[in-house]
Image (cartoon, rainbow, N blue to C red; front, side, top):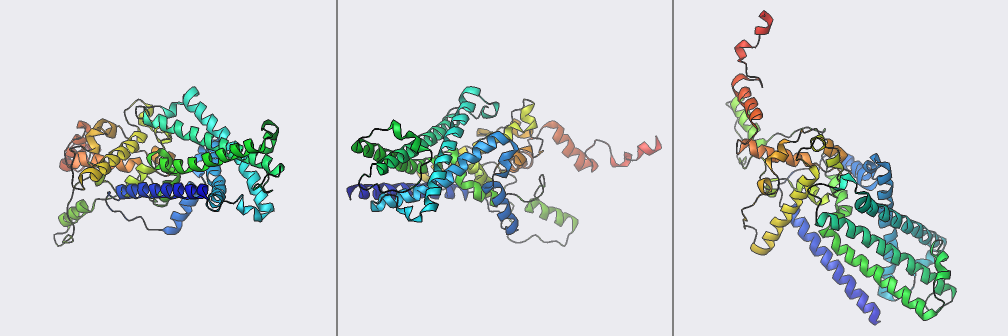
Length: 431
C-alpha cells in the first residue's frame, strides 16, 4: 500500500508540474497578436495528418527520416504500455491488461521490437552528432544548451528503453519461476533471449524488476517535465503547429490593413477607414509584435537545421540562419515571459528581438525564396518573422540598404524601380 501511495503522489506531482509549464508556454504564445487561422478546416486536418502524424516531410532525407519515424513510433506506441504501468502502480496489480489475451501478447512483443529499434536509432543519432559531426547540426546558434539538450534527450531515451527491456526480461523470468504476483502474461520475443544472463535467485530478480519498473516510470514522469524546457516539446506542438500552418501559396505576402486603408483613401476620397482601425506599429520589433502563430512556430522548432541547410544565403556564407531566427524568437519570448512572472505584465527591460537577438544584416541576407519553410518538417515559417522585422526597419526606421532605399525613391518619384523619369520611358522606341 505504501508503494502505491508513493506512486500516486509522484504521478500527481509530475502531472501538476507539467500542466503548470504548459500553461506558462500557452500564456507566452498568446502574447502574440491575433490572427485568424480557422479557414478551410478540412485542409488543415489533412495537412496535420500528413505532416505531423504521417511524418511526410521527414522522408525527403530517407535514412534520417526512417530512424526518426522509428523513434516517433516507439515513443507513441510503447507509451501505451505506460498506461498499464500506471494502472498497475495505482492498484498494485501485475500486467492488468493481460486479459486481452492474444492481442496483449502481440502488443508486448511488438513493443520489444520497437524498443530495440529506438535504441538503435538513438545510438546512430548520437554518433551523427558527436562523432561524425554532421554539418547540419553546427552553426553559431548550436553551442552550449542546444547541443547538450539534444544529447540529454537521446541518452534519456536510451536509458528508458534499456530499463523497459530489462524490466520485461526479469518479469518474464519471474513468470517462468512462478513467483508470487508475477502470473503468466505477455510475449517476450526479444528479452526472453536474456534469461540465461539473469540470476536465478527470485528475490534478486524481483529487486531488478522493481528497480527497472520504478526507473522507467519515474524517468517518464521526469522526461514529461523536461520536454517543456527542451526542443523535444515539438512532439506535442507539431500537431497544432501544422494545423495552424499557412495554407496560402508560398511567398504570398499579407497586406497591412492600415496601409491598405491609406491607399484606398488616396484612390477614393469618399472612402472612410473603419472607426476601430488603429494604426499601431508597422512590422515587428519585438516578439509581442509578431502573431501568436509566429510564436507557436518558435516553440515548435526542433532545431534540426533543415531550414538552414537549404537556405541559399547561408550556403553562400551569409549570416542568415533560419534556425537561429526561430531559436532567437523563442529565447526572447522566454525572456519576456520570465519578466512578466517576476515584474508584472507592463515591465519593459529595454531589449527587443530586433537588435538584441537578430541583426539587420541577417534579415537583409534573406532572398525570400521560401526554401526554409518548404524544408521544415513541421511547417514552421521563419520567412514571415523575417518579413515583419524588415517591415519595421523600413517603415518605422527607414533603415534599409542603400540599394533598396534607392529603389523606394525611384518608385515614389518615377513610378518604377529604375532611375529614369516616366517621360523618358518610351525613348528606347525612338532610338
